[in-house]
Image (cartoon, rainbow, N blue to C red; front, side, top):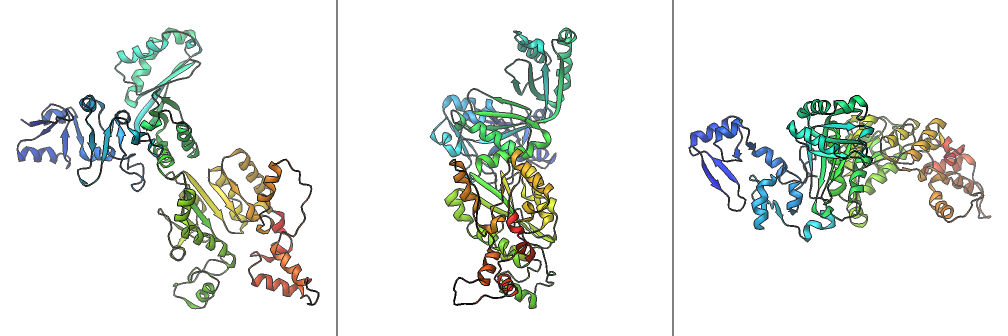
Length: 551
């Protein structure tokens, strides 16, 4: 027989074998340690599946979400939570186990036995800490292997007792319901059940409402399989504006379709039904939306293409020395003279990341850099520009690059195109369509193919992704930022005069100097001076023909 020990605080019972041999037999079946959760012998509990693996409990017991869905560095211990929030997450602790503690006003502590020094999670009655703005959400929960049963028909509208009949049938069939949703028109009602009970529920409902189905009052009883329930739980959600909007906006940005929605009037739980294949993405999206910084962006930077063959060996040499003299790290062989734009941006973002977090509450994470021939992808934010560029070894793959930047773990994704390649510009519309924000200095996107231009315009109008292109027009002069306030103020713009090309402005100034005492230079000399000072595009004809101004 097993010795039983009752906890005075929790009113829970645990069973432990009295002998070492029986203890070994208890562990040998799976190699794990187990804790009984009822007043039964170990054999009875094993037979009736009343044991819970300590490994499984730790997965859910003290984290904001399941670490198997959310990466470990983004998933952290639950903050102090109230009893109401924990009841809504039964995988943390069973509600019936908490009843004695709730009645006696005794706090419950959840800790990891493998990390006894950890603070764990304190569960108690509602207090100020549980309703802080930053602690609105206590955690997230998922219920997998769910099916949706939908009962629909125009004959249900205004008919009293139809809902009672449906749930009476389910009760007689012993099918527990996990979630219920009904539209205000009473035209349909759906509910979530275990996937294994869906067929029995449909069969019972078809039999009970056979006459209504035959008469057309109920159109059909249908099943939607392979579903999961994703829920956000928190005591601070009650009477807090914008929580539901933030929740559904996160799912929308992750391009996840919602099948059904339910929320209790206590406002402490929002549950949605999504496709099973979207469970992980949905959990990561809402987790990052509520528990990361206000603006967390996954950034990828595309540099100019290679006009020079990559340096082999990365041991220096004439090519490495030449690149270092231009401000580029030795070994960055596949970067042309114009890639200093991307290099300057990369250096700026990495050096100023902490300042951006403090000043603007924005966490800019550069997770990938690429040229047309090489790329570097990193799950962790890049830290050193030189080390990142020297580590570029993999062949470029635009689809893989975009998929890596558009991660479900972070709510926003951004690709910065610092190249001047028409092939890269032709991908802007597809990135916008996939929900990736694009900022470009690539004039080929707006002054290239009219088809590419029309697609970009269409995605800007119909999509929600941002497209920043001010640096690609007017030679980088901030024209749009000046014109927008004027237009918003009701002014009309008749025409614009000016030389918006820095290259042509320099060349014209050298051809006809303002100082009458000096003579101008030849066009070829002025052109060479402009190119030497880095004022020109990779292809000088883009400046000479005014292509830069056509964007």
